[in-house]
Length: 389
Length: 159
Image (cartoon, rainbow over all chains, first blue to last red; front, side):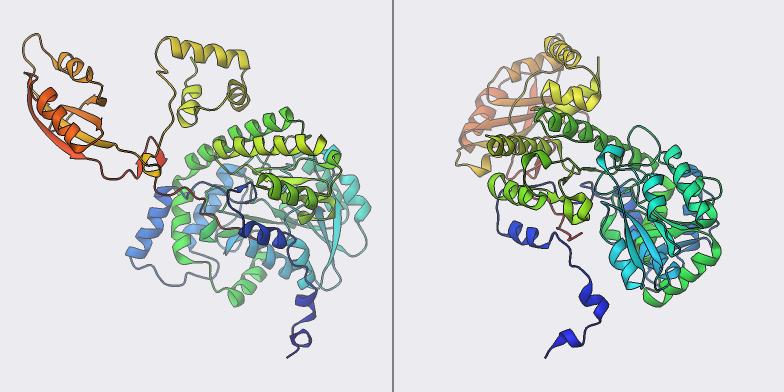
């Protein structure tokens, strides 16, 4: 049977992830030190896990309301005020989702009409482009450059705008670059957004992981609350990736449409995860502080090691990634990563997996023990000494 | 003195002064000076490998021994402990609260060695009232290291 004629065009045309073949290679190797994983190495703090377990013991095994447990939304509202000085009403302005990923999906579904242009900074997380296309939108790439610390500049944004521009995706702190946007940076972006009447999808999943300054949400810039859908989740801040829990906040007319889509596709986010998350929101601030502090120490360690061994790198201020340039070694990022894996057994992710503008870089995650990181750095040092010899 | 240095070294003694300086945002010289100081005043007593002897062929048994002591005049717990730890078989000794007084870990080549130590060296000490010997069968976690599994449980995701 020829399934190609059966499967939808949009699915067929969707580009598979570039990391695939890399992982196939990894499967048959032993003794590999991976710096490839994009998730915390911490386990979910015990008191949060316990709250999930207790909810099961108490028989909380039913659906919740579509938007999520009201108590959870109330706690979220307080959390957003406390941590980011953002104001969202529990009723109507918050929807609890299956991870930040679903929140991104339903935001686009609720906002993008066929033909609308969706402005996506690059390099960035890989889901925005295919989701925009699924909605019939047209992804438009906004390159970010190392010379600008991988920030989105108002000039780049301005130059990409057409009469069809609809939605700006703002993924900061950024995966894979570790770039952040300060209040001043965001104010300049906000001017362009207001001038051209754009909407913003602000993916702030790494908001709790910034180093040397608190994260600022674009929704807190005057005039932007009304045109921003803020997406966040529990995966990175509380080391809860496997619980699959996120949320979206925004103006009621948008959130109500998103909740409608969510209701048909998902019903509601997992109940157990929501009970655990309530505990996280109530008592988890210290856990966030602890983990962010640990990442920061590793960040500084890796930065000093990269500089010592002569790999050029911009200092990331957010998330848990380095995105060093490997241009001077005269290889593509895929070739570099494949050889590094085969010859020295270190797995990193080639930069072009995050878009064409990621070419010439590799992504290194530092969500690993210092022991692992130092061993990996030693191997990378050996590798570049060899290729430079 | 910077106890953050101790926390880092306790977790990974192979960190170099350069590594520690980078992680704590202080100078290498300062780190070196502090470590020297910690070593001199015996805050840092040594650096040793944590070995999983089950991974290699070895003839080694370890026992935990609970010791009840009756301190007498001029012969307090410290004095008794001093006598006990003088034996090289004793690898650790701690004064405890609760049902007994001193906890020992003792190493030998065979169970017989340990029995001999208890019968001939430990019990004869006058202030030692009684002992209870427990042989260690398997180490799951030791010195903050998990012995039974090491691999990263995080599965690879394609994005």
